[in-house]
Image 1: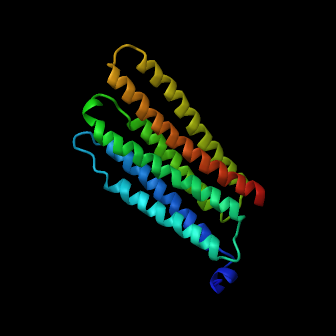
Image 2 (image 1 turned 120 degrees about the vertical axis):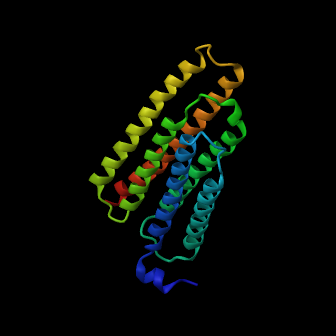
Image 3 (image 1 turned 90 degrees about the vertical axis):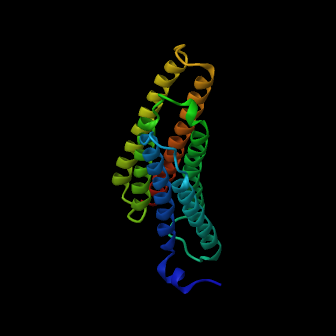
Amino acid sequence: MFSLQTIFGQGMQFYTLLEAAATAAHDSTKALHAMLKETARAPSLDAFKLARQREREASDKISRELVNSFITPIEREDIEALGSALYKIPKQVEKFADRYAMALNHLDGIDFAPRAAMLEQAASVVVEMVHELRHMKLERMKSLNDRLRSIEMEADRLMLELYRDIYSGKLDHLQMFLLKEFFEILEKAIDRCREAGVVAYEIVLKNS
């Protein structure tokens, strides 16, 4: 049954749900950055589980609304694409956190916090971009897209530095493996943010 509120409200609930998904993704990156800065105690994974749960709930609601809604403020395919991109961010973050907690004893002296800070910045920009969808201002969205691209480029530069460390001969084989794996997970998480940003930017390009 179609909702009269949806029909007359022009499907604005989709913006709210996408914003909730983006915020949950950002919260997961904030939790990761905080965990990696706090090295004096064993990491807690509760914040990541909660963020993923909130993201899944938002994703499920988006799927249900797409089935039940007569009107959407933007194309259904775009809502699905952005929802899917946002869903992948906390999933990648939780993957890092789970493995980090298991491998912590082998990671002494390895500082992941600077890269996690960049991931948090990227997710913060994604939140802004999703909020801007309500306004469809191309100039503002272009500025945010440029910021996100700059963060991604800086992350790529740091990855090159990482490979120099890996092949420096100063690390044992296990540390080399773990360092490469963990930084690649962080890099992929930043890529997920970039993908979400690209979808949001392209939505505005199509509708402005």
